[in-house]
Image (cartoon, rainbow, N blue to C red):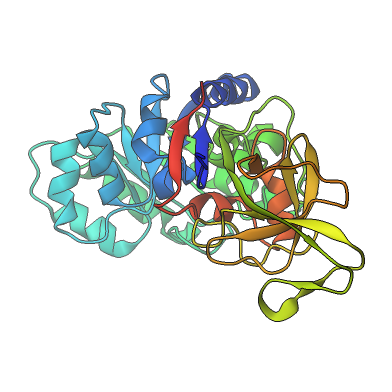
Length: 359
């Protein structure tokens, strides 16, 4: 008997479909496709190679950028957190990486570097999220210094980040956009503000560059598990049913006896757990898709297994394939049941999960 352990099925046709959908939403903007955290768990190099028309790729760390170059990716690559050490600057120059600048230390390092070719720089301004970015009153100083430096290409990109783009009623987003517009008013440089949520909710934030991440992978960036028409899940997480057993009313299942059956029923065990990246805090009742129907999670999630209530009249068999999220079962719903977010679930996929391309 051949049972399947936890497997992430990656549908690259869904990825290209989602990319075209995003282009339709922002037809005049260039796309910086965000691939950080191993392509949101989908495979860094795999996703980049499947997006040959992307205008640029965004990563968090220099190791991710180097991995893309080693895989033969030639498109521009932007380090969204910038560089962490002065010694990184030579690596940026040698590999034609662009870097975000968001503090004085990075600015000083670039101005004082000895470079044969200037670097591409994205200048990040804090317009209200208060995470990364220079203060608005620093903008003129940074802009002038970068514009006049022979170490910096003249085609700066000005950027900021929205803290509440997923809230269509948030007053903070118009305030951030207004501040960004005011600071950039005298500049003809390209600008970037929109993440996935802003691509959907705030078309006036699209400017010349958009930075979609989660939406590329067919997952909604909006709250309350709100699904998005026109995108398809790129990842479907599956595993096998490895045990089927009947239990009587009053019998407990799993560690701590956290779930007790109210009636005679059939319990199924599926070979996946938090060791694979399935959320440990998924609540009783979290749906699992099995043989065309939704069955509820019961008991605590273990490292390698979960249990589900198959019902009194189950005909499910060992070896049947269960879908944990993806095609037919939105990851947004699973994340909500686990008091988490889709980003975390996707990024937590572990190395032991097998990867298979959809046919």
